[in-house]
Length: 296
Image 1 (cartoon, helix red, strand yellow):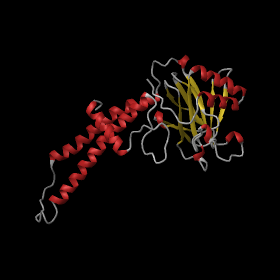
Image 2 (cartoon, rainbow, N blue to C red; image 1 turned 135 degrees about the vertical axis):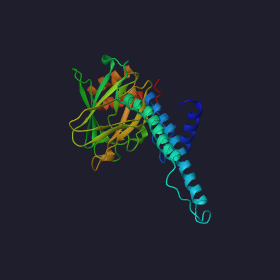
Image 3 (cartoon, one colour; image 1 turned 60 degrees about the horizontal axis):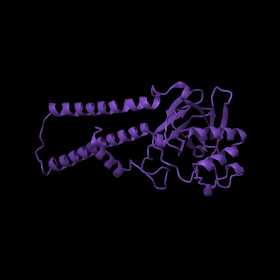
Image 4 (cartoon, one colour; image 1 turned 135 degrees about the horizontal axis):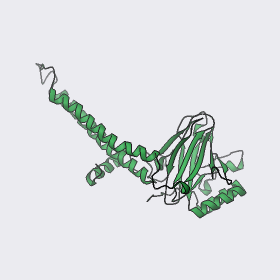
């Protein structure tokens, strides 16, 4: 199913039905997927498009069959109805064919689910970047350098126009995006396996990043995990995807991916002051438009 002809028709259908996109950030009126930023996300979207072809084909076939039966076997065209109890061949076909389709879907989906959950064998434990993520009502906490003497916590809150706290003021001139930009973005290095350990301090939240095709619940008393690896710097946006109360919409996720040296310098700046760290981010990586980061 992944050979050229199928991929061509899958992508054609995706374009027709709004399942492929060249946008790197959400746009008003957009209905498409955001461009995949990792190889796993690309495979998930490709698989989605292939399944979409099957869905469209089945829908067209069943609709055509219903129309044909309505025209061929209505009272006017068929005044004396035929009488029969069953058709063995048809009953075998409508049992076997759906089973084969479901087996094909399972064959493609289970490896993707495993790939999203389990880090590849090539990821060496000593090189993995661990970040703890905690959902709160209604902001995110990120803990870096977990379990070391350099451990520190970052509180990430949505920026708003007219916010009473100047540090939470939305500034479109510097590239802030309403409902998506935050005062302290999550920061991670490019080219490294990043492992997120996600939980909640109150109700159920969900950490979701569309360009990575990742979403996992943040549940109180439970630690969930996901991972990603991106090989180009970029700015990415997500949001809490679990209804968590009146300010659920105030929990965006802004992720900045930096080269290792800049990532380390950002940590130094943050320990000096969050304002210095934010100024450093804006200097080395303006957020005026999220870049599409393509993992190798």
